[in-house]
Amino acid sequence: MKYIDSIKGGVISLFFFSPLVIYVKGIGPTPIVETMLTVSTFLFAILAGFYISRLNSRYSEIRELISNEDAYFFTLFKTAKVYGEKFTNKIIDVIDKYYIVSFENKLDNYYKSTAPYLENIYAVLYEIKEKSDESTYAGMLSILLSIETVRNKNSVIAKEKITKSQWLVLIGLTIIILLCLFYVNTNQIFFQALVIIISAVLILILLTIRDLQNLRLGGKIIPVLESGQEVLESMGKLRYYNQQLIKSGVMEIPGNVKKYRLGIHNPGENIKIKIVTK
Image (tube, rainbow, N blue to C red):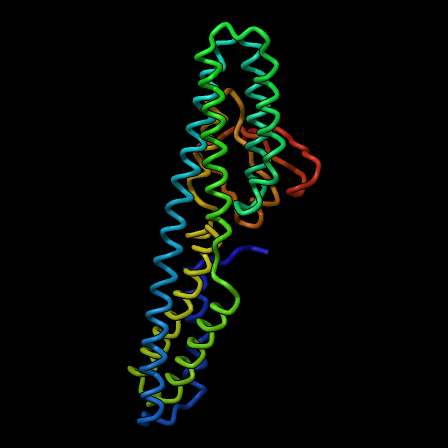
């Protein structure tokens, strides 16, 4: 199913509320309804503002942590060259598998799913019997420690979401506001237009909160994942995309990418990859 982001959802709601406003005749303003509208709007503004602020900070922090993780992996790859081409190729292979699995898993699950591949990187390092350069070896272990720290932070932050009860409160307030707006509708064209716009904005706000929670602001998965693709390219590997995630709108292939690897399996299943050339 194609993911509907906040902008598309807001536009769709315009077409939904437009005929509804025409066919549902309002009673007109009354003191009780106006009071309910004022109170519910005030509460909605406070709660929605708080959640958007909180989720936006979470979004920015996760984006920064992912960038840091990519930078650490790039540094690990460059440092591995000290031990020769054979060792570097081993590091590249395990980092490549790490990224493939991480791209296919949601951020709140990627820590567990990628843990075995990080262990494989440690295993490759342990294979070095003669540590001719102790400082370089210690530096690579330090980089892995930094990666693990970033992964832990990302895993914890990604699991911070709005609870079902909080969603119920937001949706409940939205319904109350919509009912009050339709009730006080004077059936004049100007007022009807305002009701349509305000109703669509309410839906837009709810969907924006959902997008921020799902790390899909603008519909696409957090944009900084592109830096991971650049790390693959820097190591001499083709970019990787999964056809199922492309169809669902999670991944998007940039127009300038002419050759890439395409996963033809469902995320989480045995990896099957083909090379695609435009």
